[in-house]
Figure 1: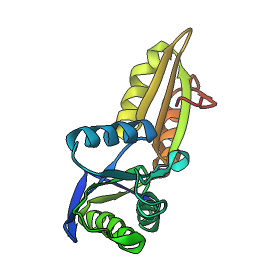
Figure 2: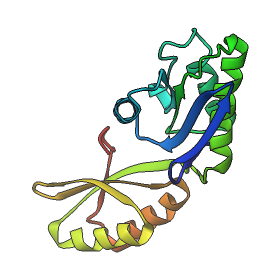
Figure 3: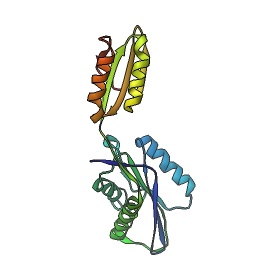
Figure 4: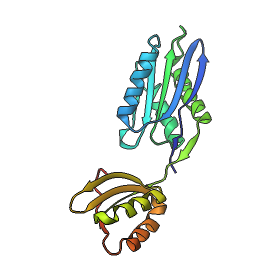
Length: 199
């Protein structure tokens, strides 16, 4: 099972006068991750490096930000993978202390900083979501919205045409019961649609 984080968690290491400030936090994807890295660079103008790793499905990435290749971003990404994280950005801001750590020392420092930050982080299991869509006459829109709210479904789009089309997502285990309930309450007027990609 994959996990995400409830909120950001931090950890700081000092190794041979170099300061490693690690943060692990939930993000939606690469765009949000890159904005956060840019923000960190602005907050720490004197830092030598802001290395990062993102584990978010097809948007995963790692960046050494000037450290020797493979000593920062990739090991940080490996820590996220090892702990089954998903939708998580790990960043480490490094202030150079004047003493070179060597490739092995850097690899350990970046790995440890992220692992320690994750240790204090509050993790939440990621539940697979079912994407559903249905259309109903206007008179039944209120009933469907109430049922979705009761089931904890997330409404993504509502299209008002000749009928009302609703696209929504909810945890997989709840989907079957909701489909059955809506079918019964829809009095034969509710039509299930193929969910579109934006749902």
